[in-house]
Length: 75
Image (cartoon, rainbow, N blue to C red; front, side):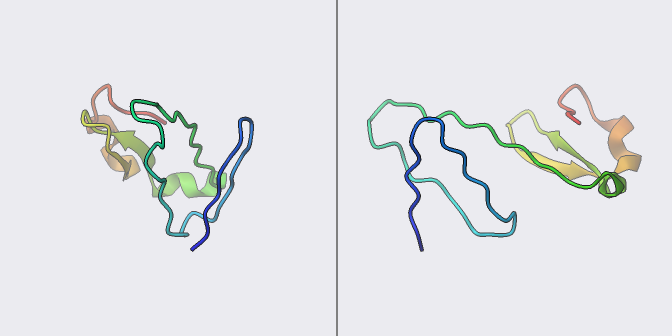
């Protein structure tokens, strides 16, 4: 296991199947905002779209089910 301690402005890219997790904030009450992007080839769109539940959980929704989603949908 390796630890990566980022500095302000650093970017970390990793293979999507790599097991990973973040450590808890070191300063109590502090926040650690992040920006996560998922990129895939255009031909992968047929597999589905990322969607979000009201409890902030993300999942892939098959294209034929897109119409059944509510406003939580994000493409």
